[in-house]
Image: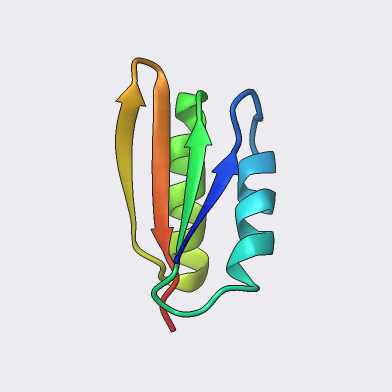
Length: 75
């Protein structure tokens, strides 16, 4: 299942905090999609979840200056 977070206008660490809250409640292989317009959030969010939990993530630019960070929860 996919869970969407609107983090447009949010600066770090807000997107991380929002994603952490959902990731703690979902099942393995579910995904959290964080939509952001802050390029610095891309590295912050992906690095945080890769280093802390080993969760893989991908990044897609869905519009100019707007990205979706897709984090997959793994056990």
